Image (cartoon, rainbow, N blue to C red; front, top):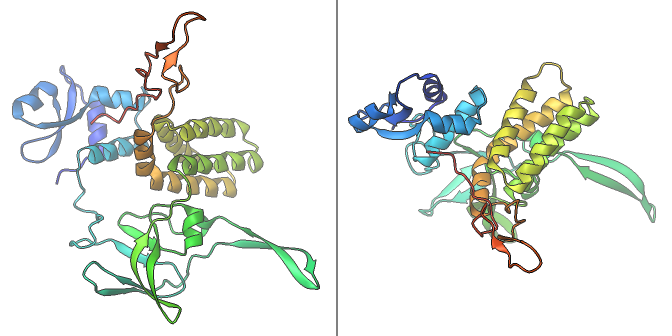
Length: 333
């Protein structure tokens, strides 16, 4: 099946026609860039055009990150699938790969009632802890245990791969590719099989994305004394938490550029990479959350109406049409 790539987006960006350049699926199934009139005459399926791409980039120069993001969003909008990659179809020819990061074999029951045993990897994912003595109770030592970053012990998200982890790891990492055995059957109190896998959600995608960016900003200040970068990232995080899809994309761009810098501390680089992995894993959930729960309209503060004076009744807000919510713009297909 036709699948939009970053190369297609670059071709659209550099096309020079007297008519509006469009990206379309031609009658032979190939994706090509045509003048709009030519695409319509050929009966090609138009996916997007140069004007929509310019609006998406907000006038900025196209780079690899933007091109890949725009291509991905077009594929999602038009249900285009890359036949060279695995999909979520666990019963087809390209099943998802399940990696067990718990210390023990996990026995699962599929939809046909058959048992599937997933053996553990050599290095299970355990949350790092820091232990500090704080005193004693009746001569028994008492220590304080501080849990570390779960993402630091997890592999990076991979297409077509999900990871079985313990619930504490899933709760702290908050990644969509982490699954926890659920509907567990027990014999004599011992777990013997699980009839389902669960995604554990502990916070909204907005909060998780914003917090990841904030951790990078904190590292920029404490490790690199880079207050300018920290302030920029904090501004992005505030908009991301509010529910801004453009700010989310801007955050990915800024983090990608920061990670590519040569002279930054190891801690800042590690936090940046972890944040990028978090945002990439949350992208679909974040967009869905913003579409379902648009941020409050700025002019009316979410009330849907604006005061006029002490005697005139309020009027409907023209910005949001009286809904009290911003009009969320989904990337143009």
